[in-house]
Image 1 (cartoon, helix red, strand yellow):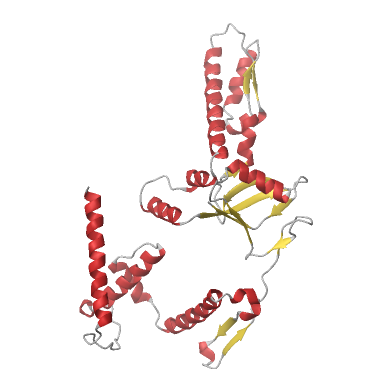
Image 2 (cartoon, one colour):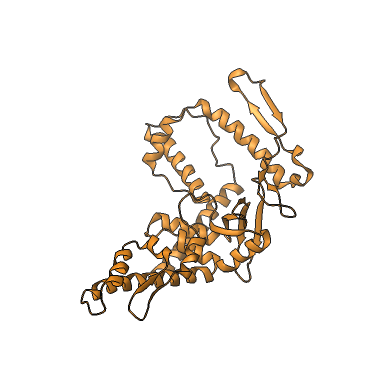
Length: 330
């Protein structure tokens, strides 16, 4: 009930503000002409810092950037070198011109419609040149024909599954079949940490076992020792101690704890492996602690219908393969 009232009040405030703006638009006679100002950050009566704070946070809200308190804006404004503003304005204007060409669809007419620009204000106003951009640098995939031999940073693999989302298992199978590779990892494109939606090393754990023979001796897969090295001594002692020894229970308990951990690891992997790609992404990359980072993550995830994924893979001959970024639309 309280949330609904707050939402309603917010909506009324928005409509009231719109009404005020429409009044100004309809009758400009009451507006005061703009006058140039000499910027002074230390005079609170001129409202310069208040204006900068409002403008800064409007941009922040628009682009989901962290808002800035007034005192932070004041400190930052005091460090700005005014001479940079001219260069920044010129560069932003030139970039906007190139963006306008994209909006007009000129990219279909070739790269010669787009220009790089070079400005050197220190050498005089006449030192302004434009030239056609260099072609994008090709990146070798390592694949053989008929597979793509190279790509550029502008290329990507588009996969759209809005109706029926792929599971991680299906995505791995699709990539391996389409490009004739073995997938090692699938991760968030650009992420440098050791996190992944899929890791072939985790899949190998499905084959790891811990079992007992009729005499009570333990057989353990070699891979188990890499993750749970503490089990090695317990296995050795169970192989040496006679069946009647009372100490066997201590070492068997240690082995059983690792066996339970192994089964939990397998279960966790299969849940992610057979679940949707977006669910695996949430499980791996959503911040665990509640707060600003988690709120920001949730807002971005809710507003986007795609993920950008990187793929680490190799051929049957163990040669590394480089694939473009995967844009997975769900």
